Length: 405
Ligand code: ATP
Image (cartoon, rainbow, N blue to C red):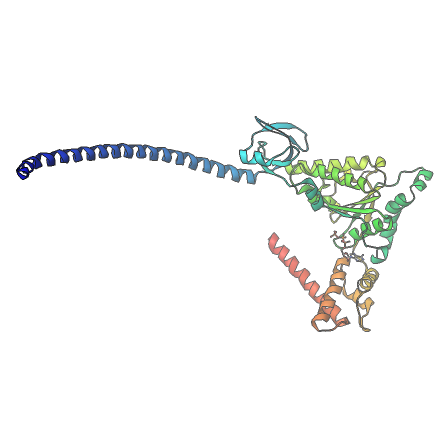
């Protein structure tokens, strides 16, 4: 009986449960469809967002490229405000409010030096000022060059001593006579002839600090930096009195004015003006003597040669034969030379060599002896060394010719 009842009821129950299943499946399908819809919407949104980022990336890449290309100016961060960063430009001292990215902002503090572009946007933070100073200035409290280390420049040495050494050692002499000591000495002549040596020797002789800076370093840094570096240079000199300030390659900042009005030129002008004004205010500066050097005398602006500035111009030429002989003797002082080494013959051989060339010949001759397992250097080593140096010079000149072609 039970069986029969169950047998009759079964199709009804089956139908009901199938209906339920279908219902459930439909509901699931609906849910999935709406989920799908939602996902599609989100995908569209994400695509749109992606496009936006792509465009931003392109814009930033472009901007980045532009920023890297244009010249940069140096400024100091004054203040970080909600509206942006207040910066003060070097050179013209103008203040400006500029926006920065959040990452850059985290990196900045008041008094930081930054590089800004033409539109005064901060491009990057610069390293510490003392590092820049250390990189471009060479401060030597006791340079180890003596007058005896310099060959063939007796006249020049006397002039440098008169103009630099005497005012430092006996300032009262100038007071007694009632004249101002010359403020600056300009050494001019070909490379490697001993200009730096002369400046170092005079600093050594007067127990003065030797401070060297190259003109090219002053102007090839960030724009706006040159004039400040000149101020720093004199400040360092004042802190280290007595001091001999040696400005090498002065032509880089004191060339004849050109007609072009590029910002680079303006920068060079500003740097030179700063140098001139520091030199004009020289009398109050105390025990600081300034020696400048150049290989390009013909290029110099006459402003720098006016009386009261570099009023002693001293030519430092390549050595003559007698000078070359002396320089050979100086540079072989600590070498073991053989009996056959004839300095007069070496001087005659190395026509047109500068002091630096002669030093190179001596070092190279020593290398030939070492290669031959000898400690004694013979005349033959010097001859070979001279050949080699000449070849190197000719190769370098040929290289220059190719580069200019
Ligand atoms: P530059 O114009 O290239 O700066 P410079 O005229 O200042 O050159 P120095 O740096 O003084 O030349 O010389 C370079 C080296 O050459 C010296 O360290 C020294 O070894 C040698 N030298 C040059 N001239 C002389 C010289 N008159 N007597 C002895 N050595 C010299």
